[in-house]
Image (tube, rainbow, N blue to C red):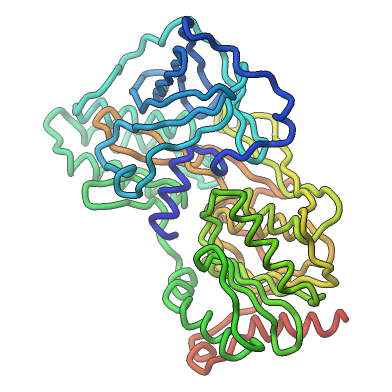
Amino acid sequence: MKVWIAILTLLTFSMSGTYVQAKENLKLPPPATTAAERQLWQSEGYGHIFEIEGQSVKVYSYTKDSLVPFGKGNIENNGDIYIHEIYDNSKAQEQFNAPRFLMGRFVNGSLTDGLGYVQHLKRIDNLPKVKYNGFSKDPVQNFEVFWQSFEENFSFFPLVKVNWKEVYKEYRPKVSAATSEKELEDILTQMFQKLNDGHSIIFGKEGMIFSKSKVEREEFFIANSESMQRNVEDGYMKGAVKSKLDGRIVYGQTKSGGAYVRLIGFDESDPQKIDQALAEMVRDLANCRNFIIDMRFNEGGEDFFGLKIAGLFTEKRKLAYAKQARTGGYEQFSKPTQVYIEPGAKQFSADNIVVLTSPMTVSAGETGTMALKALDKVTVIGEKTCGYFSDMLLRLLPNKQLFTLSNERYTSPDGTNYEQRGLPPDEKIMIKQADIDAGKDPVMNRALELLKKKR
C-alpha cells in the first residue's frame, strides 16, 4: 500500500471515508449541545472519549487502564466533528498538508460516516480514573497501553491464531524503566508483527513500520505495475486513453469496441469531484455495452468511491457488504450495518462486466470489488485480493507515538469474512514475468474472451 494513501485513510479515525451526507441523516435534528454545557461521550468500541464544550471538541484514546489526550477540534452547527490537531510527534498533518480531519456527524450519541455506518456513544459524567493518565515517556506505561489497545480492540485474534496474552508474558519482562525508545519500538514491532495485519502500523522514528509482510505475488505486481498498465494501453486499446482525478481513473475503448476502466485508487474524498469525473466517463463510453474494470492496481482510499463505481451499473439498490466493530471480547461485535449500492445519477447500459483483481487490490479496492461482485452480469478474474478490509483505528501512546490497528469486520452479502484471506476471483488467471516482458496480458486476454462469449 502506498504510504500516503495509508495515512490519509487512517486519519479518518477508522471511519470508512471522509464524511459524506448519508441520506438517512438529512432528517436528523441538530446535535444536542449548548454553548454552556460540557458533555463527555464514550464510544462503544473504538476506544474514543469525546469532550464537547460549546463548539470545542477534545478527543481521548481510552482503554480500561489508560486515558491519553489524542487531539482537539470543533463541532459545527450541523454536528460535523473536525479534528484540527493531533498531539503526535510524527507531524503527519504538516507533512500531508491536511489542516483538519472530519470524524463524522455527531447527533445525540451517534457518529455517522459516509456509508451511513454509525458509531454509538454513551454519555458519561466524568473522565474515567485510570492507572495511566496523560502523556509519559515511561517505557513500561507505553508497553502496557500498546498491548491493552490491541487486547481490547483488535478484531482478528481467533483468525490469526495468536495468543495475545502469551505475547504479553513473553515481552513484558523485556521492558523496564531503563528501556530506550528504540528498544521499546523494536519490542512493540516484534509483538504486532506476529499478527501479520495489513492495517496495523507503527509510526516509527525512521518511518512507518508495518505488521504485515508483503507476499511474493504482491511484490511482483508492485514491481511490474507500470509495465502492465503500459502494455494494456499499447496492446489492447483503440486510441488514447483518458484520465480523470489525477490518474485515479483511466479509461477508453478496447480494439474490440468494449470499455476498459482502470481504477488506480479511491483516495479522493470530494464526492462532487468524483461525481463529475464519473459523469464524464459515462458520457464518453455511452456506446459501450461490455466493460472491463481493472482493479489490479487499486491501493485503496475511500469505501464510498467504490460504491459509486458499482452504482454506475445497477438500477436497483443492492447489498454490497456489512460492517461491524469489535465492542467487547474477541468475538463480541456490534450489530452489522448493511452497506448498500445506490443507483447512480448517471449510468451505463452494460450487458456484461469483467472485473480484474490481484494481490495489489487493497482495502477500499477490495470493498469496491466486493460491491461490484454483488451485481448481476459481473465475473471477477485474476488473482485473489490482498485481504485488508477493516478500517484503520488510529491510536496514540503516552509518548505521543501514533499506531493503528484493525478493529472492524467486513463481510460479503453471504456473510463471509475475507480478512487476511483475500477476496478470491471467480476464475484464477496468473500473469508471468515473461508475459509482461513480451507485452502480453493473459488476464486481459481472458476478459476479452469472456465478453465475446457472452454477447
